[in-house]
Image (cartoon, rainbow, N blue to C red; front, side, top):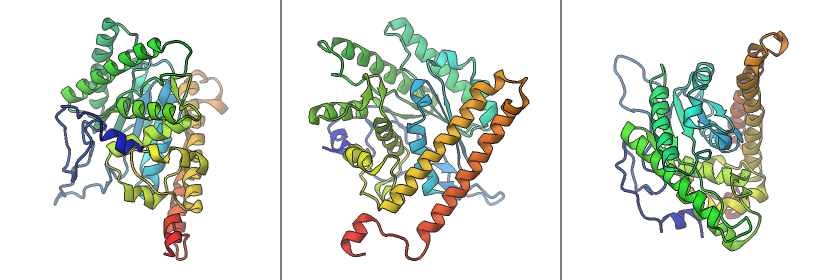
Length: 366
């Protein structure tokens, strides 16, 4: 059963959506509380408005802030791979601001440095895995998240903040009766609800990962095969790609767009395994499109790691000019210029006469 089929069985959440422009068609509220379409598309006569590119504006700088899950550098790269391929000439820029062990409260201590380095216009935030299972800790999580989101939203240049609910703990992997797994997920469910309330109260975007990913985990255990997490806590790379599909669905990316770009962060066998679980139905891409998508995904890892070194390590090495923060940032900028050249070259190749057809077009003789 596909994730879209599973989601159709889920109860809808009674959260009033905050929309920035109208969309057509139903949206599963269990996945998407807030339609996070951030660009207002009314043109200005006096001033040329930036081009609308999906949920973003041309030139947007998109920052993912979070804890261990974001520092893994998987789901954010998969999201970036989709949008950079969809809009190769839009000048979009992505940054990973994940830090292991982070909470909304601890993030307040270092977020300004990160914001100064990245100068974002759109910020995603994913926290919750490091929240203690007590009423006091959950209350502090909500207060700290609200304060952090308000602070980030108030920074110059930031147009929108989107909160992501945490994914669940994968149950059934550890020995025992599973009671500890259930308790962990009860806490994460409350964290998810708290994040949703902060988003609702603050007029922020919100995309839920908990419910859809729990269904994916449960279905994965039912059918067998390799677990989709490491010891239940950290999603595997494959699970991160499924998470990314939920985020992309929440940002109104549709199936035709997916098929057009051949979104394939994983190797073909890996993508074939998780394709039925993706939140956006998609067909198997041509081998050429799949390779282009994966090449971009891997190139983004080199860039993310270079930026990580500049952000997390560069400030500690001010006495070493060759490895100063400035030198590290310059290295990251060079890698990003390479990514820009790559996506433009790939777009040109995809549009060239005689470009390979998709697997489905080839099967139909088209």
